[in-house]
Image (cartoon, rainbow, N blue to C red; front, side, top):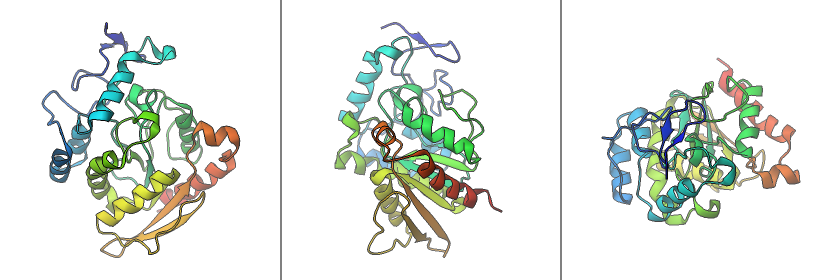
Length: 280
């Protein structure tokens, strides 16, 4: 298959994109260590000294055979509407501020969204909703996220997915979720001192947040707070700091087209997060 031009830069790339070849915001190089199994993930994540080292390692992970095969297969076959574009086809890293006050946590990249563009929540209708509202409440510098390299910047906000590769039918297995968990735990640990609020998109994101903060030593209420749109929970760090969890239905087409999630509902959750993030 011939290399195809990046839709913003025009530089040709194969699909999937090899690390260190010039894709916008690619954190890795050809020498970034590759995690090949769950033990590698745990070892590399635990020893990552900072966010750049962690995100580079995440972006080349090959620990889950099924997810690697799926994400790369989608990248090569492509959706017809994106047939003239190269696909990132690698794990999608956390992205945004290195000292965030807001952490937005979701399930996984979309096969023809983040798996194509190389940026979390970017390139599908869910992301269109999310970034428009982040901009509206002051947490993004522009209302659209089209592709890595489009000039978008988040304000005191970082985005992460519990699972970093696009899964078939948007359903990772429990083993895949657990294999990926050390990436998330290390990323949260590296940014947790600045955090004030975590916005969890969907029940999977809510459960992942509770598991992750418990794993890095936070006191999580028991019984654990139940997911529902607008649900809240307070977590306590080992040093006594508190962190607010806010829940939202995921801005998937299934939820937005049916009216399960409306614009005012998402506005209310993100507006509350912004108020906490932007206050001094």
